[in-house]
Image (cartoon, chains in turn blue, brown):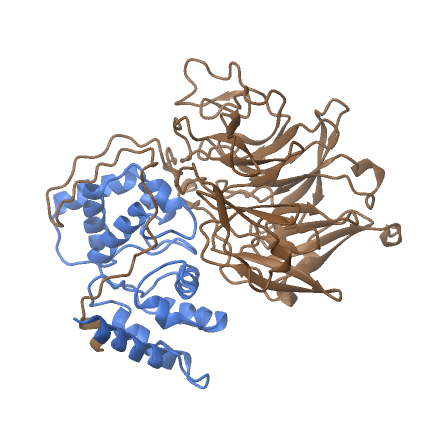
Length: 190
Length: 424
């Protein structure tokens, strides 16, 4: 895939995403949900499902993307110049989509072992026992496994800075082998 | 949509920080997804949630995040903040998301930092109207600010910079010049408070890289450097995190607020007000001893609290005291002179939240604490929710105080006049 083509494709999305003010919130959200999944569940590699996500967390991430504090293609370009009010409306609307369903099947022994790892490292405190999160703490249960793993790796490497330092703190004692198990478990958690 | 079928990779360039200073065991074997499960790691001692108790109440606690968008001026609940009789709290400026540390330029510009975002704001006075403009963005946890002789000093997470003649260049600010960067890059407690001492040196903290752990010798301390970045000295040790400091107007001794560990219990330990009396020689206790008299259940074995400098005052469990400021102005009544205001940001690691106020500390002649009394209240409401969180306190030339609030993205002005005293 050439970079030029990618840039052109992103520009096309940007043009689609920065709409005339007359557009409704759902019209403005259409390009977002084309990737993230209209029903709240993403079918795309490394693109998170957003259904049932906490609106406060969504708002924080949208602002961080818009202001290029969280760096990631194509989100920074898509959200450039979008108003606080629109971001709030996006967050509130997306939060009402149905949460994703856990990945089918799964190795029960592996899940059990990773559950203990998650508990030992207190993932189930801030993110809650059902991993639905709360307010600024995201829903991570039934999220895409590839996205969960990428997120853990990005926090660990410093490629992603959280809004605050909590994730950098809790991941400090963990390594990549742990992340693989945690992502597997959370994607399957029900 | 065509874009979604492409295997684009996130652009991460420029976002990766140095990891060399991380005081952790990196056990990252690059295993493929689906590989055999790793053995469970040994119990962690390096986490904000370490020892988080396993009961339903504790599992409802998580760090509280301030809104990422600023409140409109008319949405800021000023009338719910209560000040003593004769004082008046008014909005000075708003629209500054995550407003943190304050510094005042010689020509009257108020500089406002952020911790969770990447920017510095400048508030200028246009014929009595306070105008906010973004001064810098793209900074990394730029919490610390100080000003002297025309130069703004700025502490990001892992470097300290200066900008000379800043007030003449507010519309086109020059690139900050790094003066000191021999600093770790840990995110936990990595943000800095910055102040200039009466000795004309820059003072700042290097926090503990964890909730509770045995920190490397480079961490959990206060340092000072010359204004050009040279001559680093460790000024005090055994300090978990400093988020506010000031110098006594008469003795010139350094006073600082210190935030203590989480998850020990709902009511212990207290956060502290400390004073340095023997520069370079004192140990304030972290991680072995909390609040001067509580040995840590894990790190306190052996020496406990022996040899630890005791706090001047206990400021409440998880209360998060941040900015502290000695009052030397002429506006407030006499009893406030040379006393100390402390902004308590408020707790998260406590079921019934605590703090969310400004307290006033009256000192004895020898610099110890006589009393700590509530001064401005109402940031924490009876329903256990914050409607504001005070951060830093700055004295203005007329004796009024400016107070920043990172919840509402605002700065308030606190004034006093006899005419404001009501007969109540």
